[in-house]
Length: 341
Image (cartoon, rainbow, N blue to C red; front, side, top):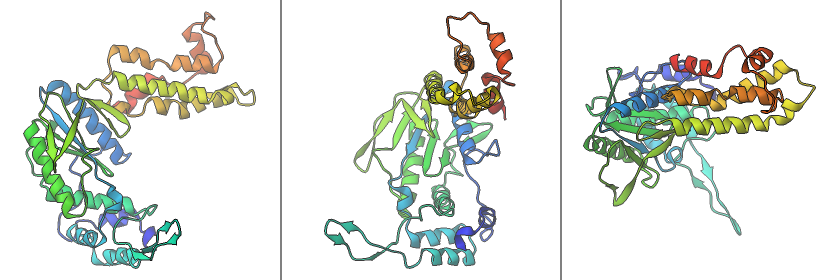
């Protein structure tokens, strides 16, 4: 019964107890697609700012086994602090109570032991519980009130969060270091620890090396953020090339279906739109497009020629190809639509 509690019912109760409603301190969601779009939009704006600022730094934080290190006793305290009603907390405590496990070893199994950490894998409440944990850390670290950050759309943005991925941003190295240490200290209070080896720093200008707990934090010139590559100079050309290569690979994987005579041409066109175009346009909301990139994005004509089995030696105009396919919209037009939504 507890696992079937609707998200909107649970989230509507958050913050009512202490008059402090739950809100993400990163950018408001520009679309109705969830927090992922907010993070992508934030990445797009931060890329634009990187072009304008002479000094800008980001810290990509990685928590060691984040979902497995949530301490249950501390979780109940966090829920109370976040204003979750007692009856919902009681239901969750009952859901997590009396959990035991054993480990299979070479000559049998170990003794049974109590499980006191980690949210349940596969449970629909687990992402919500971890997000509450992360929100509690950010609030206690004082990031919502901090002046450090990057000004985007007249708002001060110093963190972007999606699930267990947290990115801190600031205009100076000192501000970023201060934000990082605050988040580290608050994370440790609730049982989460930073994975220094996977935590990275990216800056638009040279910075001094960092050390946290005696370990050096690696400085990088590029980072994969939610599947999209972000570079220190804000250049998107490599990311666009990668997406185009992945799109070509996706179309090649459809060769057997595209060669089939049992599938009609309109169906094949829909297959390309559904299984190739999304691969190419993944994260396009954060791209800074140049004229050269616009020409590369026109690779849809290569898709249609391959679909129609038109060899490159055949002198056939693009207009005749498009007339036969009748694609309704171009790939570039779809990308612009996604960027403007």
